[in-house]
Image 1 (cartoon, rainbow, N blue to C red):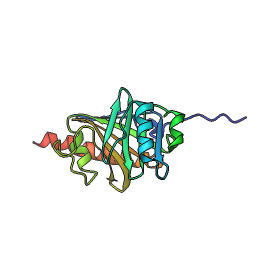
Image 2: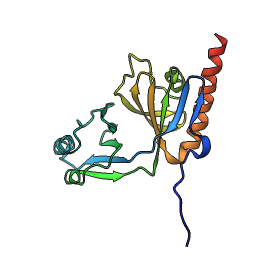
Image 3: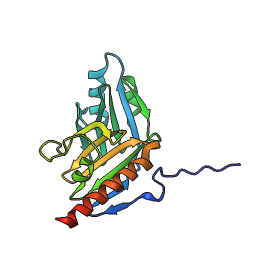
Length: 183
């Protein structure tokens, strides 16, 4: 009989630290919730009751302890850190997508400079505040970028793009670190 083992899509590439920025993989349950037609208000109320979190609006991130709810697109939110209650299925489709996405956490004083080399988003502290989450391109990949603190971000990409993301992050981190030595 063949035995299968779960492996990280990052392989041996993480954790990574270059200059002032570090990157680590976040292994956490990840689910998408999509309200059924005409059930958005009921889904949000049930979510609030069952999860103790407010349904996030566009570009918002909500947090309670280690559980995060973030706006994913016009019809979905993503829940990280726990498996949503099955009672939510009365008002919304609940789909486990954890095996299709990679979540990386980036920390450090120059994390915004690193990400600014990869995405068109305005990442200045005044514009991209703690508690914001946006879908955007990250180089040539689709990503969800969430701000968890002044110098702490989470980036989600399709699992199949993990090595590409690590390559692009490494290049940007090296560039930012090298620039610090020139000034």
